[in-house]
Length: 203
Image (cartoon, rainbow, N blue to C red):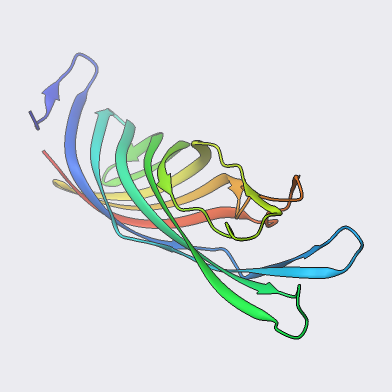
């Protein structure tokens, strides 16, 4: 049942939170050869688009210390553009969209002074499902772990039962790090980063 519980060491609250996210990743290009230094494919990372998320929130406070966790469903669209140079008389471009569904679990601890809170902690993401890309190209493979991790920093303002949070997430996985070409890892050289603006109502 939603509510707040009086504990020996403080108070525990529950709530619901909506979040809007943007990414900091820039466009990047990777060229793939056939082993004899002849270019046969080029893949461009275009952008990542995060759908607004809804999460369940747990918030614990004792004096100036607080802990906050969330259970959030996240959907991310990652867009790639693949150029095929195998047949130089018929160069083709195909845009591929990877749609990833995941459950995110941030664990934030920090200090609350008056109405302001500042914290940090690990972030865990469990991938529920995603579609394969480049499946028509035999030399491409995808090897992605179900669990991805990162670190988060939070600045928030508490307005009675409302919490306004600004979170920065730095993931330890790279963009497209699940891509393998001819058996070798050939993802992009930039970490996944999110900036989240959230509004929560606690009970």
